[in-house]
Image (cartoon, rainbow, N blue to C red; front, side, top):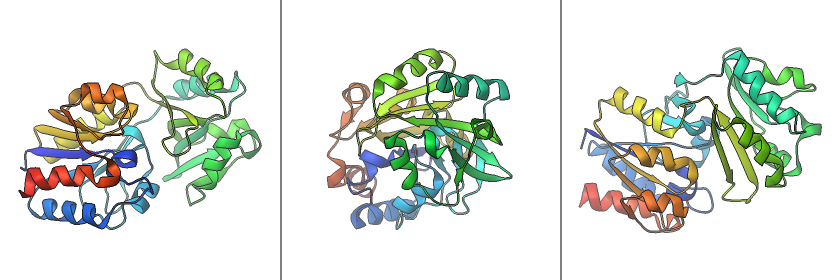
Length: 272
């Protein structure tokens, strides 16, 4: 059991549609961890929002956030590893958005703190709606495009009202960076996320396995950003509502996330 890392996506996979964990899922995870299993999660969320939606789940292992751009101590919130763009890469990515009239959210470490910067007057309606749900200590309003690249940038995200606005940026950058073009599973708004080349849930999972001394990876997911993780896993399980591309890679398709499919799988596998 201790040579295997069980790694789950959150939204659409471990979380229910209400973006929360059931008491049953929390109970199963507590029991398998107590029995000696290595369980963690890999999410596109930040550690701040991931911690909120996983309240009640006792996981003391490091967790993967921002689609693999950060590995974080789940107890202290301290980063154990983080990706970064070079200054030249930051300029290239940001310019690709600006040239097409788009203004992404930029995520960076500024003065030792994890922050995201937004230019309110340039946000699309969909992007501003998202920002309003993230008004915590990380939020940093800026008033010019020059401020957007302050600090050490590790992640860009842009939410548009129409996917046609994002596609040209995706096409311009996809060969040089890790780009994820998808739709939000809750709002259906089109998203474009940009990370340094080679950064993904898969690369972070490998680092986490090394850290824990694990030789086997079993993972769970539902969306396109889980594909790299599925490609390297020994076993990979898609929930019932997963993207068809992910199901095609899966060892098997398990039940629905609203019916605690991951927890039921773990209980059957590890607790009998």
